[in-house]
Amino acid sequence: MMLSIGDLVLDITIMPEGPLLVDDDNPARIRLGGGGQAANFCAWAAELGEPARLITRVGEDDGGHLLVAELQSHGVDVCAVWAAQPTGAIAVLVGPNGERTMATQRGASVGLRPEDLAEGWFDGVQLIHIPAYSLFLDPLAQAARTAIEFVRRSGGLLAIDLSSAAGLREYGPARMVSVLKDLAPDLLFATRAEADALGVALESLAKVPVVKLGVSGATVLGTTIPSPPVREVDATGAGDALAAAFCSSYLHGATPAEAAQHAVEVASTAVTLVGARPNFGPTNSEASP
Image (cartoon, rainbow, N blue to C red):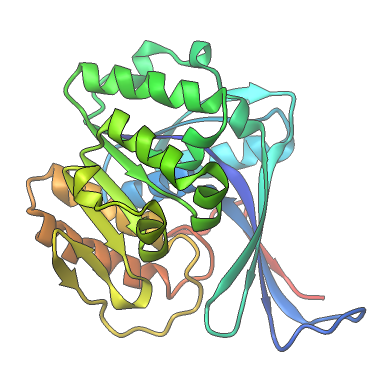
């Protein structure tokens, strides 16, 4: 069982058919689907055949119920805490070369508290995946630390994904380094920009650091694994796919280089799809103006 704790949100993916014109209609493909780094990790883990569990807090609204049902229909065990706040949403604007700009409303997810957690949710968990977003704000950060304690008490591994260079800058790189030294993750995932922002060797922060290089693949412990050539459509969720595939292989006894090879192959598949998930469920729709 692999578990992640954090956000489950609505992704609104917008792919304009040409340059955006101010004060005018802009033809585009628009998809609505499930998102959130923690939820995406679990969706990809389930797609790879791994038992996956998500702990999240969502709004007691139609969107929240639909997003939970979608994940459950794809085999993810969702432990949802229902809230009065609205379910979060992310608008993803995709450029012609797959580059992304995102606007985020975290919504109910950041309100998860340690007392919301049930010990039974951690039964059989061999690895806990923590997006850095889940460490940025309390009370969610306190809940994430409590979850880590539950998993490590039974010998499980800790994987942390730094999530966002912008979020890292806002939180503070030195502060994040201190948190990572305190938590001592077994696995650490970062983009090159995130790794550079920390300003210290990733090997000093985790047993196995993995640097995500986008179209160039990934680097693990000095070994670079190149990506196979593919036609990139949308990179949303590719990093989550890479992390899920790496964790899955590593848990099954693969070496870091072997796990990275599998992870890069899965991530290369992810960028050929629109949206952050391996499948489109009942929440997903497409429209054009």
